[in-house]
Image (cartoon, rainbow, N blue to C red; front, side):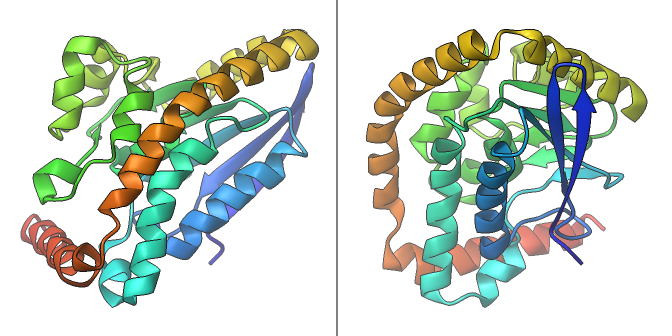
Length: 257
């Protein structure tokens, strides 16, 4: 099974690429899949004027890192995976074309991180949750995550995001974590394409120049947070703490079945 599927659509003012998560039944991510996604986003940006990140999974948009893959990985592989999970929010920040997150289901932990650098985030209503689960499970929360998210979340709710509250789609919309909600997948796609067409209708020279300039200046500020966050990548965490935390996540998930 391919981890991602890419489709292209020609619109009136440009070419759109859809990248579909197809990583597992829960749309979790292994380290290799995380690296693949980063490369795919940048490669696709050379062929499209805008990217829509989405999923056809009935429940999960992207559910973050796969705990079992981290348990079975070597210390070096765990190190690379967590490093990339911290790095990807930074790497996607100045993607050369805008991207929109079409959140069709649960958007947990790393799934939320991947959407953080998007221009817009739209979510399907339903029994879905989104949030950063690091603190509640015992992991250090990289500061760069909140530094990007606080650009659009209401300031008084940043503490809730930091503390790992799980938000329903309605709650996520109320605090600014997502930009709009839809009652069906069809409506969600209409909302996404309406915004995509609006962005594509702008003068590419004016919009893209202004967008990239602003984002690259901001990225210089984010670099200090990224460098500080890499300090959590210790052998103690990778060898002893991370496997225990992942086992706890799996046990909790099994208990809910």
